[in-house]
Length: 121
Image (cartoon, rainbow, N blue to C red):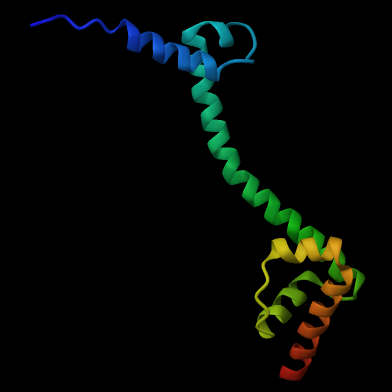
């Protein structure tokens, strides 16, 4: 049976890890052993923070909506409830963008929600 030399694949694997570690400080960017650990840790952090980013953005949207709604004389929770009662299905991301970029449209949505809530009482 012929002997298989694995040098090519091992070098390729090392090269790929070092490529991912480019820009890291000191040994983490030049030595395979440290680069490998750094790349694994970076991947773990990136995975975790992709989830965290979604939570943070939703919180930011809620704060922006709350600020816009309070200017018009209502609380955030009452506004969201009024939207549900009025069957207005706009997500928080869009509502936050409307509150910042088109306050008039946001005010119209709020008034419709208020009217429906008053009519249902």
